[in-house]
Image (cartoon, rainbow, N blue to C red; front, side, top):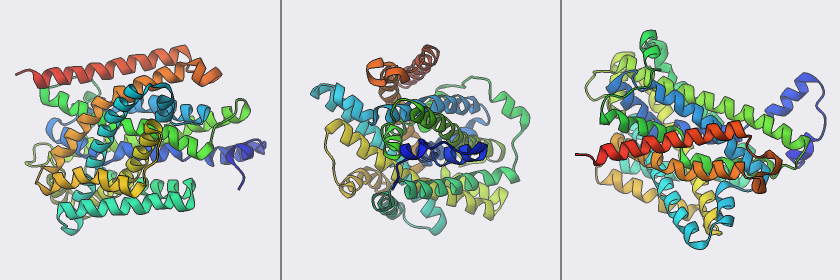
Length: 418
């Protein structure tokens, strides 16, 4: 089969040909974008909207803008170096720091898996009344089937399946807005940055962690590498980078619209309704207020979100392990190991929605460990050559990292202060 790079060397005929050639290069960012609409996002955004209305809308807008910048840098690193972010780090760190970095990355991956499996289990419970532990087990098994698509048929079919699930997620979560549109004045007011107490800061950190997800940063570099390989300098690389900008922009706009839609739905239809700061309570309220069809669409979207995101999460975990430990583990073994914490939490009766929210806070604390090395590496001429990050963009990324760290430190101070 002809490689993408070879195909890119042929000049496209006319504007239509160039557009088709660019469209053929899209896909990796849509897979990474699944991480931005996983069940953790649902829990964080629905909880924020139900408790505080439109107050934290600005957090989602800012987080999505950050995500666009960061995910492009990750994909660019994979294209230019032909290696994933964990692999580049693994080649530059001594054994002790490398293992320490791997431990924190695995903790982040475990928190991700908890969110995805718990969310899928909630969806199966809403749809079919299945016990949560059984639903979590089913989600884990089905995710293996989705990953088998990539192992057997390659990257493109896997991308197609995940993009199809993303479409289901989008339709499922936005259907309710047609029945209960948001208040325009509330939306505008929600774009003004502010908080209302410690709990709103906790939710903001949860929303940030659910939107700018560390494992998505790690995996996007691997997705770009696996689809395109290492792009040689020159016209081929320039074309791939242009296509990647479109890929990231479109994919994360879709993910951002879904996240904002979830918060708007909760703010417009669920605020003040008892129990709506949990997913199952929100589902019940949606059914009562907007009808069973909208409730069904919401539950189906949640299930598609859990199934797709847990597959991407397993892909990310394998990327982290391979890059930092310099060895591969059977995907089935990794899937079994990483699903255990989620099943245990479900079995002991942990409140599912709050478990999701807390898992996203853990992810928020993991963001600097992924973003800081990424920003430094993509600025390095030794790593990126002439493709290194320009000074204005690098300065913007430094400001972004500083703000994220500041939010996390503020959250930690609030949590530890009596």
